[in-house]
Length: 484
Image (cartoon, rainbow, N blue to C red; front, side, top):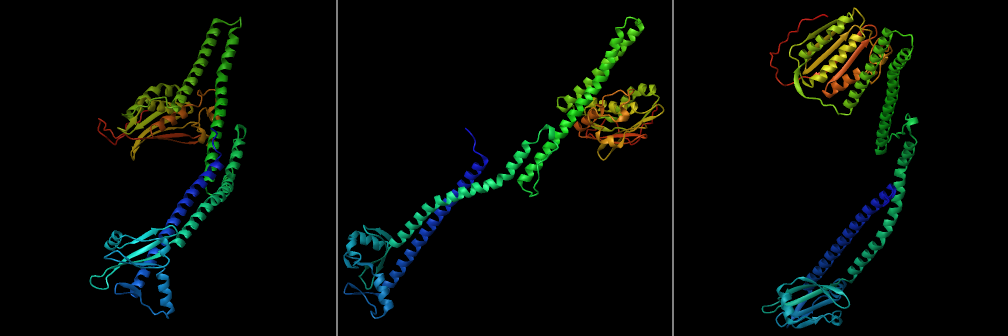
């Protein structure tokens, strides 16, 4: 089933809600008006009854109205009050007097009904063939042994007619009001949705080729502005992702093309008939080296992709960061000696962190390996492990070639390498620091880098310390510096 358009849906919802509101308001008004008319009729018949009691006299069992007939006020009141008026003898139930307006209505009660009215004199409504009348029943005892039932009534025709007119007005005005509401609601919904239609057209015009375009924010601060801002944020993130994909594709092609070109050149030379066995062996070794580079590149890329996809497990157990640093330095000692670089470390004792020891070890290896690669012979690389404010800090400082200022914001991007790092002598694909950042973030840590071109680089990783107690005693001294 086809869904309703948003404009139609809003119009119907608005009209339905207003219809319910108008109907409830109409019912409430009708009942309030009816209750008010009912109270007025009861008050009127009560006041008339009290007034009649003041003029009613009984002479030898016969009711008479005693008033000054020349007084227009009294004459008018008595004439109006006795339009629907009758008196019964309470002992016999006999009708003593009845006003002319009641005689054609045939309103007569039996003695039993009279006794019931006298036992419980209440206000009652009587429906006749011609009209509806509200009677008050009151008992008068002018003398000992005499009781009379006095009934005084007021016609409810005018009140019933007023209620009927109000009901008809409500029944006719509600559909007319709903029609006006539907038309006005559709017009208002159209005006309200006009900016959304414009936003939809503008959003449809944005494609991969023009991701730099954005929706216009009107500055009204309403929900539509919030939608535009959110959409612009999504487009901006998508633009960055696509730019990263383009850079990734270009960098990947560049990184793979160089080893493949070297392998092709060696293979072409191997086909030469005048090559000696030693030359062919060297060519095979060179090809194997290029294959190893490609294997390392693909392995690093696969590891990073699985890490970002959340497929790699990260254990959570306490370990001593100082011990880990000591073991990594021992592993990299031969590398530093072969490059004539001084490798030193200073470690605060018992720096306990909680995490995956193998991943933190890879983080250390990547940072120290990078420092050794970009530090010329005679330079130095220093590792410092410290602890302060419930944070363990791991700092790798080198005296190498440094990183240009404009390149610092991009060093943690995949395949990014500053111009100074693109030397053929420097092995790497620009994935090490991206993996370092992922490892630190998975351990609720941060990575900061500071560098000055020609003066060296400082990378600091901060990790939360572990609350688990370590076996060894917590001491505040540093291990002696070891040079390699």
